[in-house]
Image (cartoon, rainbow, N blue to C red; front, side, top):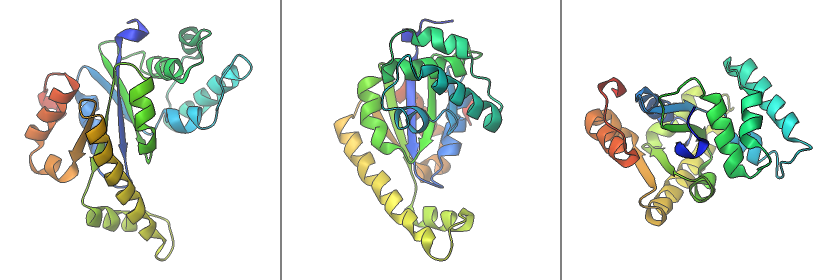
Length: 218
């Protein structure tokens, strides 16, 4: 196993029906990248639920995370390995690394570990600042297509599906802001461009990450 400081980390954020599952699969297909979508959900189930992590609650946190991953996704979190990696350092930086490495422990050839967390773009600044060796992406899609797709798939009643307009607007506005502020660490992927010219766009993504383009990413 690599030293935990040897890994690099990728965070992808998105809105509903925006193409993140496609991009996540493309990233995960690269031999140097292990990537998932909305499974670990570190920001939702660790950072937001546990404002403070210490010796008194870390064991409960680990058991809770293991149970959720096992029941929902048939993923076996190695609690002993995770606890060893955490040690006495309960910073979110260290906790994030410990959870990611323990979850992907079978992917020994991967240099990059990451996940897409839906509706979590407000965590990008924290991620880029606190998680060392990190980069982040967002994927944006034509708002009209997003809204139409969301309407067909949501269980929201009546016109409640229209709330997604504000989510899409928020994602697009913050993506522009992050691209200006973190130009070398934040990349915007446009869904339509990815569908129209997949080879060109995937090569751009690979160049940004620093990995070789592989045919199986198609």
